Image (tube, helix red, strand yellow):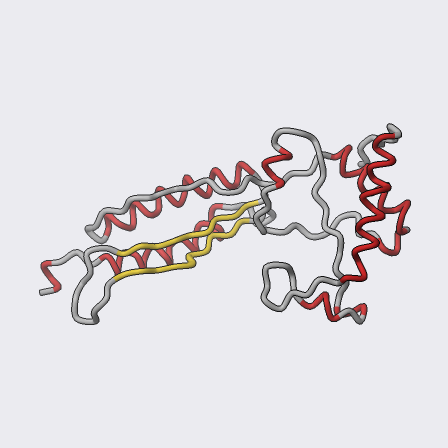
Length: 202
């Protein structure tokens, strides 16, 4: 008797599709935002309407205001979609990692040391923005600093190690990069202790 039930699967499926509209229609196209439904759990039998459905989301943004807007729109959309299907939805919203924002002076200092050590041909002063999670973001909320990756090499450079990012089962650390990384941190510490702190670049 499906006409006497409220189907959470239909509601949850509608929510999944509707969530895709938030980034497309509420976020400035020049901003970065991601809403991913990574898990959908509902029911155990094909002839029974389940009592509930559970969605698990990952929400990412590179701007704090965008992140706040994503939460606001997700809450409103989930509530409205659920009501339209005659069901009730609750959100267990957990704030994860903060947005990582480097401070200009410390980033310029880190760039200067890298250029001194390796030269401009081996330093990328500004790489593409990444939507990964990084706990160093919490450090940067308390003190000025700069998060930077030390490259592993790329396939284009003939380095097989560059094929995969970290957290990938195919990742392989390029051991040849260890002396470069160690030399960089030594020089960074020396220059910092010498008081050679540059001003921010435009």
